[in-house]
Length: 212
Image 1: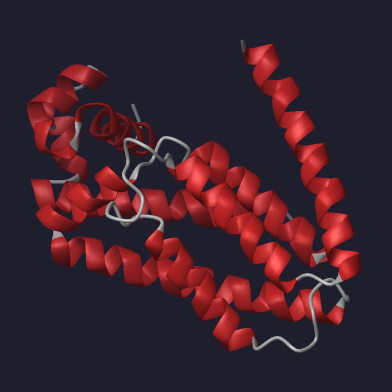
Image 2 (image 1 turned 90 degrees about the vertical axis):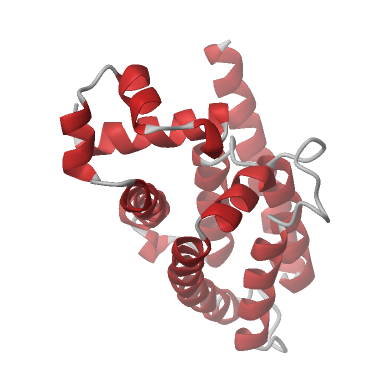
């Protein structure tokens, strides 16, 4: 079993059982691997958490490697990335983030800062592109909007605002994303967004039906 599958398995187990219930022993039993194989990747608990979070950031960044966005308009880029995030991270909940933050504050903070830096640069580029294409309004402050987008992402993981037993990450992200687009789009952009988001929802509905 390679490093990717082991780290994916650790993430899956943590989401199922809660981070506090996961040990090296339970991981090895869950993945049917030897302790030595796991310790080659991470010799201790802190190192393992760092590796899992690094793997999660890599999964997000790989979305931009999977697609060549040069020929996409700004709204299609955001829709595509949003759809990928929804599928890849739909099992996340604020409770998982809170537990990470409480147990490993320094590691979690470093993870958040690196993720924010990456998303911030990508959303800035997207807003610039959307304005130049007439999809987003010309009176927008690119830096301010980029910061607002980041702050909303952070808020999604606040269990006080969004109790995990009531709101899934998937639902929170989709609502946040739609509100963001509707707040910056021109009439042309909003019309395009409405059509394309409907097409994507239909495609996902067909795909889910086939899986069931």
